[in-house]
Amino acid sequence: MSARAFRLFGTAGVVATLTLAAAACEPAPNAAPPPASPAAVAPATTAPPATAPSGVQQASPAAPPEQGEADEHRHHHNGGVIALIAMSLKDLNLAPDQKTAVEKIRTALLAKMEPSRAAGQDLANTLADGVAAGSVDRAKADAAIDKLAAQVQATHGSSLDAMNQLHAVLTPAQRAALVDKLQEHFEKWKEANGHEDQEGQHRSGPMLGLVKDLSLSQSEAQQIKDSYRNLLKASAPAAGGQDHQHKEVADHLQAFGTAFKADKFDARSLAGASAAGGHMAKWGATRMARFLEAAAPVLTPDQRAKLAQLIRDRAGQHAS
Image 1 (tube, rainbow, N blue to C red):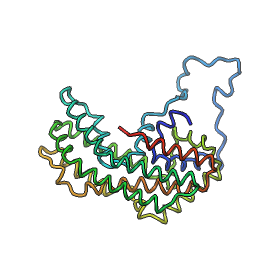
Image 2: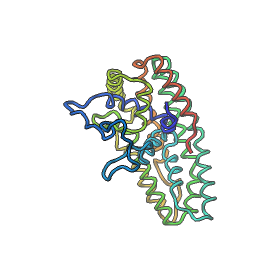
Image 3: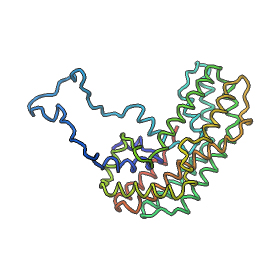
Image 4: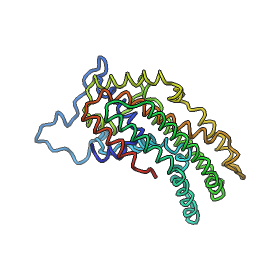
């Protein structure tokens, strides 16, 4: 697997990646063959122009920035809403005298998330063991998911002082900007985690390289996709109830935004905050587990070994 694809591949990104395989392997019905590119029909002795002619798009070796961001959001369920806030802090335009204080707060928030990251690592190891063996143990996976969700909820409770300190450090304009960035990251998280099981909701991107590395056939990809959908339908409440709108989280973020932009703020006054983080954790982790449960029996031993090692390696990297 390429280093670039590995870097973008989050633990929860396994869910999106292999589901994309079916779309990647299936030919569109009654589709005409794509037109030949200029490079394909040019004589072999013709050197390519240094600059592409006007209107001709050259392929870029790098994924668009928005694609990379979407892939990054696939593994941020481990920290819930607090993880999105920590991400949003990186986007703020701060005065020099604010940067030290805000970075100290951000570092504190990341430290608070350490238990939930450890729980995410435990879940990844459980799933990797199942993938390697060819069968994910649902009881073990769900117990690890419950542990993760509980840790994410506890993380929010331990982060309240840091949130109050952050409010005191930022100006009114910066607080409003943080709220906007938080909402933006939440929308990206929804897009990255929300629709892999739905018809017509397949996205392409750099992680399709993983499909090539696993050498999935069309029938393997289709079998995994169908099994995944059936598993989610059978366990809809545990898998987030198929609520792609995530109303529980959206309501909390709206309440947080209104309160945080005000002159006075107390994070302890916001009801439902820890539950919103738990929802994010359980949603992403359950869908990941169900997908790997569907994929494991279909993959060959070599494919399972590759995927299991990738899950362990990626989960071992701490997002910052």
